[in-house]
Image (cartoon, rainbow, N blue to C red):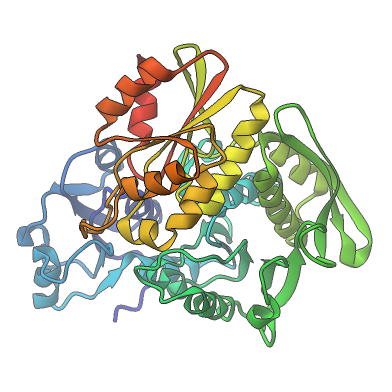
Length: 464
């Protein structure tokens, strides 16, 4: 195994360099003096950007892309063992590691790496904390799993030992990381194509928490059931956060909570453990879920020594990450929002936020993400979607899976129809557009939702 050191540049090749995370890692290494190349199936704006930085990008996966002088090859989870480049690297004796392992090795080169984990909320909290660290003068390097306008994308390269990145539990990738501090937002059933059950998921989060070294901080939501199972005996300093109507005596909490007419929260960040008011915060994003996300980011920032004024200023100016209840424009004179939610809890939070806009009807166009998730959480999806007044379902986005033939969006529709809800299920986006053109009315609010390509539909609607 190659002895990787972020401060000692080498020659690295990325298989699948055009992906969101892979491209960010490639750009980060290039900025540190590494010689970087990579391959991807197709050209894209991302690959063109990488080429503008002097990174060599090959189109297609071919053994000839491996020149033999690479010292490390990095691949995504989507790359199969029979990949030509992977086999060529093995034949040449070149070490090949998955993306998560590279990210972990990069983190090891930073003195103050913060990882944000949880079933949901990771991207928003990562973006919020990054914004606070910027306002506080920490000059962090930031890796976000989405597009955060505050840093102009999903990567910011800083010049200090501060590092902020979200950490995904899928395939236990976060167990390859090297965090100094962690935030754990929540732990719920998800990714059941990999995990056995909720106990298996909790076991992985416990192992993740055990990665924190002595002197590091674990900030964890005290509302997580049996939270002590996750925290007892850790080397880390454990700090809890939470809302006092959801859990008992969290270390950090939000008090004096109020909402304006659009559901934007104002609150006092309070360090209850030390009976200390930290600062007053007014959010520009809506909903109780964003209140909790802001509480987590602000609590960690305070624990790391950020100035209270920087916390308040950054969160006041935070307008959200891309695809997090993002306003897209109008369609037939009604507002159109787009949201990444693909888990029942996220859907519930987004629809509750939508209902605060005072419109007569909330119309959701939902694209389920993966057959496994849809089957495992089918009743929960129906319950969450029932908060909308009209539900329009797109086909399941397969992502990494093959269609098993026994689960579809019609399965959700059947449950919703049985409960008396107005629900429609279509096979194509064109059919959905035709339906909306005839069934969108004044005072509606339209929200497209899902982790697949449903955003293409919302873009098409507002562009006319």
